[in-house]
Image (cartoon, rainbow, N blue to C red; front, side, top):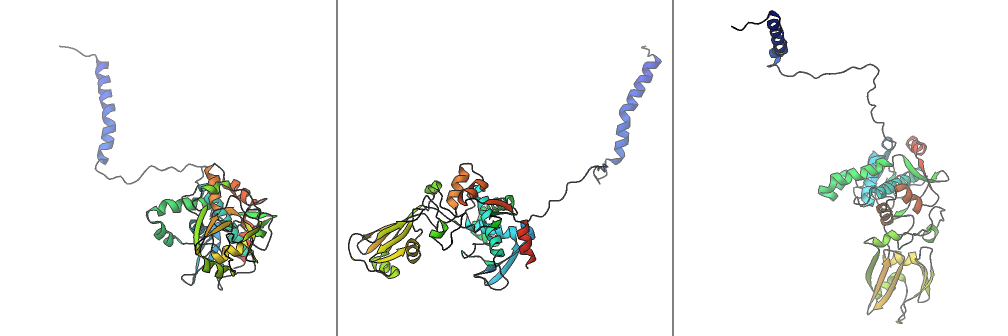
Length: 342
């Protein structure tokens, strides 16, 4: 028979016991359900701080809903999301949406700091139309966007958040941050369309607009309607009026028709044209009118902003191109004043 030395036998026993002990300790708990997880309480470590509320969210906006004849109240950031979503396509580049958010917030702050509130009933700060800024709430946007709602609202909200608490200022005061859809290749000096000359609303080149689907347009107006709306009588000659002057933005400044002189803005408003950069010709009993651009042309071109963003420009580049000599400033003190007035 094979004989084992005592120390070999002892080693084998110890090895077997070592393997069995962990199994013996675990077996009594195999049938029990897990009731907790390992935790730590490390001294000296700090937990992540909760995100601070945004500057916008601390301000309440009272917007008059014209179609419903009631005033809706909501935080400024939610209002701005509704404005940007209504005023600019969500498909636009993010930097263009940021520029729109910054312009929209600046417009609101400027409106709130003005003593005159036009077009709103008592208790409202501004309305939801082009008189101020077009606004749609989330329920309206859900109906408008349908299956695209989630990604669109997320993108617009990101643009608003990225510019939180920022406004455009000139000499320390919020500007009139006007904007429009599409230029004719140039923006317009403010005094050539409105009464006041603002140093930051100057004519600048905007070549990106040529790619806008709204860059050119044609409309047909019957001669009788043309004469009635403009208060003129056509002579029947081949030439219908004469352009007397053009603006810095290459729009019609003054035009003479049958001895009557009208501004390009007057013609645009009376005939409902897309732009005051127009030309026309007679064809039978109709006037065929061609226009370039869409909107008043003063301030930031939205399609121009998107074109700049497509080329890699930031929202800061965009606003400083269309609003000359402006600064991007904190609106904290201004928003505090707005809140204090309530």
